[in-house]
Amino acid sequence: MRSIRRDPVRGPVREFLVFSLGDDLYGVDLTRIREILSPPPITPVPRARPDVVGVCSVRGLLVTVVDLRRRLSLETRPFGKRARILLALAESGETVGLLVDEVKQVVRLGDAEIESATTALGGDSSEHVTGIGRTQDMFLVLLDLSKIVST
Image (cartoon, rainbow, N blue to C red; front, top):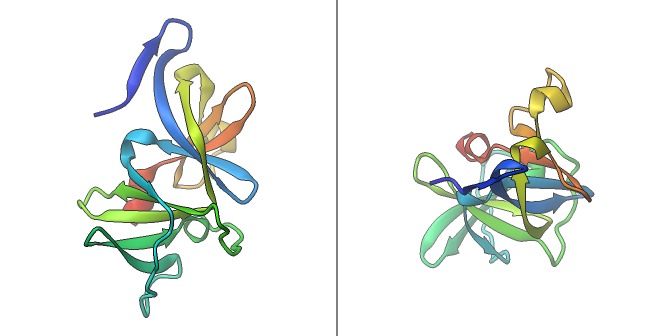
């Protein structure tokens, strides 16, 4: 079930959840996000991958929490009061939590406002990036959640 609408000028329009990691803005397909949470207590997991912060319980469901900064090989910093966990559903059916600095807003982008990753970033683009979204007042890196939560 995709959130695609038609706009006579912009073409098909999709909704993206915009969040920040450091000074940069990122977007993910809104239909892939189940919930946005303030971070609950997180229990570290011994010998977990470096990008796994730990696990937490969300209404009795055990959720693996991934530091999206580490997953994307960005500079690590302590998370502040505005940090949030995005609950996303992996293709395996597992719910994964993605730790981000701050959730900003939801934007609607038409096809004309999205540049493909290979065009925008060159041939050596990150495997997690699907494109670059442009609105009148912002640029955002569009991420492929299926690749982020499946690895």
